[in-house]
Image (tube, helix red, strand yellow):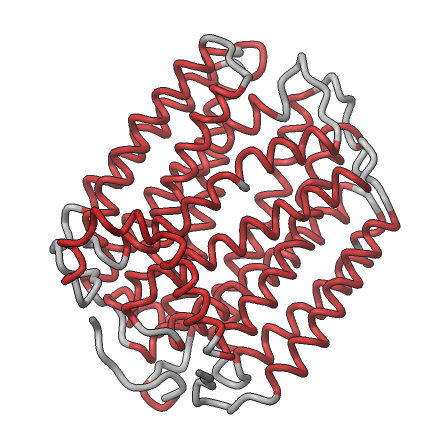
Length: 450
């Protein structure tokens, strides 16, 4: 594991974002892990465009709030169960091998999805195939999170968390843009199966490339530090529930990490409602529901605006957290999100929605950078896999809960002032609660109980 001084040793850190970026990218091992993330998440974006087009923007389907919620629940809630398995295995398997085989496995699975799309499948078999791809994806992302402290010093984790996950998200958005462009070149919705098949095969090829890139790292580089449990791997599956409980107990005993997870869960709930509303607005409100190409193009612009916000968060967050505690920055971002939901969000125009999406992108990714760092700083390496898997479960369950709320409250158009008020109030209450709770903790020393 990479060593270094404690977080907060500002004197040893560069004074500019570009300086920080150069320091982090100077590490050969970080660059290699970074390349795997960018390639893999770029492929995620390509795959998700094909999925969104097929599920939400097919000309023969009308999308309601309940339909959108059901799709998200089918895709998110079941594969939350993968989290405990991933945690147990990530704390036993060499994480470099996980990165290799997870990407190779996704290559095969995406090709299977492509075959189902050609056959016009829309039932449980199709969702099971998509679920398999996304399940492996969560496994891989948890592994990337657990591996990051092995390739950067502790005092550079904030910068690494700004560069790595944020750049991965931007790569996914770039991949989505490329997938959408490829779809239009091949023929858009009028080409149907041919366009979607082309996009899916492209995603499969990118996943394979990510797996090959992971081979450049030494098998032992990414941990775990203690692999003595490898021999007991066969028995690990019989203790999945216990592994998840151990990860939850470990993180809940670290107050900084636990408060951060609570804050990001509340954010994820609010952001989930906004996401479903945005899909419905572009599908049924801003455009003629029959013009699916226009709806998909508009949604692509909204995601691009979010991507700009994510990239801005990577620049802003490391600079701000040199002067403010990470907890204070999370509180400010939650409060800003509450304001943005009201204005310009409540104007319900395409221009105002793009502005809101960009600002919410800053808040969303800034919160995630800080919480990722708090968790990495505050948990022991032996538990990181289980803790990050628990983190993923919290993420997914919060979003599914948001989908259920959206299904019960949002009209098919996606426009609802009362729901928008609930989202804004939720952000405001979370900001107040998290700010007060985190203020009781020490400024630099992780607070632990138990």
